[in-house]
Image 1 (tube, rainbow, N blue to C red):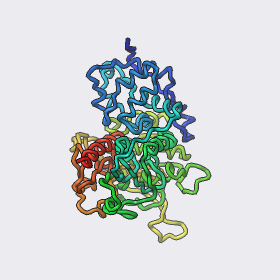
Image 2: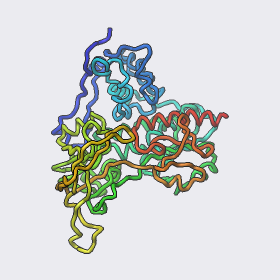
Image 3: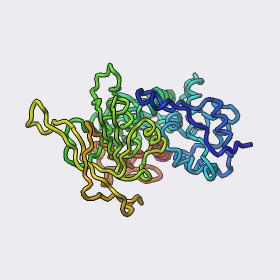
Image 4: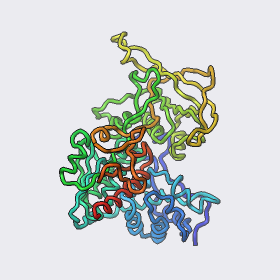
Length: 470
């Protein structure tokens, strides 16, 4: 008999006042008792609407049913049939707008905590299972994967399970892509990513780091090396700026650079050799998950005041509600319906004529109001005349989106891209305009979610298998 409670079992978390000063994981995870109670809320629907909301089609009722029975390893086996990164997905995927949005329990109450249960199952497996994954017998075919982010790792894992000899080429010194350079430790501990990557290695996936495709090697050279197909999952790491005055001042970061310094290079540690600005008053421009990550990281680096500056209202804020809630709990101030028009600063005191190396002293903003909907359906923000004011900050972090790096496009003949720099592909297969080359994730769509990138990697792996087998 299902538990008909209308609310989810709450996720235990660190106290906001304590966690705002450390980089330990905020959400502490379900205990076995809480997981069993939450699993009991699942109605085990025959038509399984939740599965249709999952980009990688995890058999959600089946794994939750195993949790009900206390068979946590069995639940993990069901999840891992569809997902190569269950411990990651359980932490960072926007379940509330995907699988949980389709949950029948959400009609008259809160949906089942599918993501929280997935995280519990994956963590239980990682803690209790000591057996390495079994490497499948090789089928003799070789595939190259460019990028070790969620799209690349998923594609590599699915192909490895089919017996392909897969080599992943990563530009950075550590595998994981955005999972290691973009998402902070307090949301996704790097030991979790390392564990997921090691599981893929046990399946036979080779990972070559410090290799930039388009510079160290080209796509053409990968084919010359005997790879029969190439999957491009190189992400969208090229930051965007607003083009306003003052963006060249010291103290202005892209969110990508700021988070990479902190997450990948561990600049928050006292013994780190990577410099990062420990500002007193920080403005983060943008309203997505990356903006929340940057703001909460700045707070943990010692900022006394952190602002989210966003040109629309709270209703249009694209970040996950959970991340917004955590940011507000930690004391981050949201300046909604505000937009920067100029970053203020003074010149280098050692060289007053050096205009490019001045320091941020503030940011001029204007008030906004919502007008008519734009192409996406969101109401367009309109500037309120004569509403200019100065925000007192000494650091500005731009988090207004990213674009795919043009390096691969510029070095690969016959690869069609759109006006935003995304690789053009067949939607269902990820096939590009170049024979044998597939692509997926942010390299195609621009910055999106981890689970959507995983779905693209999964679809491409299936298509690559069919392509190679003829």
